[in-house]
Length: 88
Image (tube, rainbow, N blue to C red; front, side, top):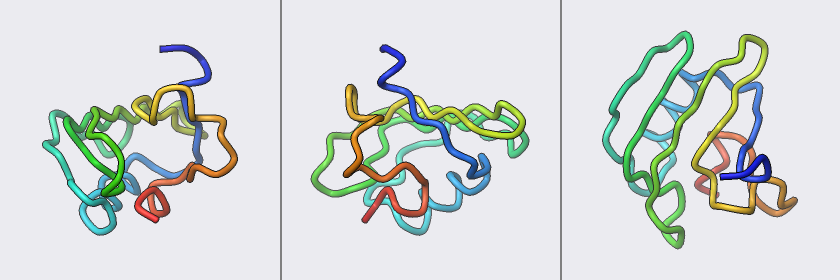
């Protein structure tokens, strides 16, 4: 993983947890969920045409870092950066 494989967002850890249940194609299995700072979900698939992968969301206080976006695409302007739009 490189810096380009990370995404940053102001959405909360809880926003990602709710979005995976409401909007993602395959919700995966929650390995750890701490509303205040950490979400680890194994084998999620936000969009039907994407490969499944593990996603980790870590709170940095004022922002969150998301690990598990498609490798090399975190900075791509056509890819969504926020939990609620990842399935669109």
